[in-house]
Length: 432
Picture 1 (cartoon, rainbow, N blue to C red):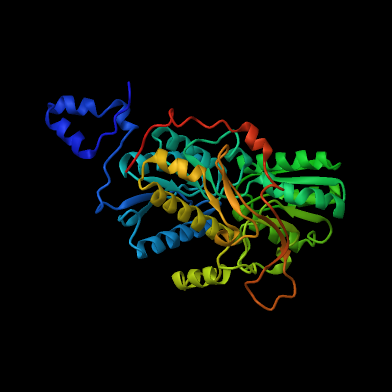
Picture 2: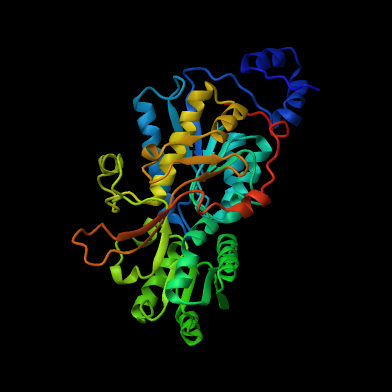
């Protein structure tokens, strides 16, 4: 049967013709998942924010939300989106997939959010995206970077805005083998992002002639790394490749620095989120690490972006924006722009706009043009490698950018093969 796109007025009219019991029955079944309501111009456009406020990634979650809020404030200052003021509801996903599922269910079914935005933990993002696909709600995964998010766990409604573990490994591994040696040890956060990122590193190390001599699993919530670091020291690798994030990474960096191990072997951290290291001594920022953006890039628009951040958040402890804020801002900006281009909040129209997205290097404040991979729904963008900026006279200038790689140089072809997006026809229609 062909699906009808009904307005709220027509639904109410039909309801008035039914008995109370029949009306209750009528709203079960497909209408629970295929709601298409006419959007009155005076009705706010509600967006559900699904970022962590507690748990391992609480600091990054806060930075993620600040990026979203700045983009939304800029649109509202210009009159909103399609004449509607954009408002938000935030629920803490607690860095746990089960909570992420409950949060997504509530924001869609109870709060009637038009879109969902936010994630740092890949396990949480995967859980949210499954709920979003069930309803047809467009979901933006802003800051989680497991290769599976745009690979086997991809969905038609989900768009991934961060670089993933394979992208960062592609940028770092070959050069590190040449510069430091072939014996590698893996330090891996024991959850989906850590495992999939280390798997990508393992494949590339083998491809370029290196050897993985051991892998040390780091349980989430680890604060004492002494036994793990002793084991790593005894293994005497040329390179330690760490896929450890959030508060776990802070603790690891502090203890590596205290033991003087940062200089005894080469360290590659797959990705370094700004909230995880901001304010730490530069001795704790050892090794080489990846990022998608840095506030001192000598590119058009960067200085103005920093000023807008500082004007919006004058009391924030982080005096300059980092990659997590940047990803949250860029994802939200492009979502709202896609709604404007579509002239509608209809999920299918917005999905098609995002699938064809291309953004110039200037507008992205990166070195290369970016584009949405329509086959995986991951934003293809510049990847940077950096290290500690020793000798700096500016407190917040912590990174020294070493290199930049174009999207094609670091493309995750494995995700291209693994991702099987649902068809638009099999994705429920959703519009608020």
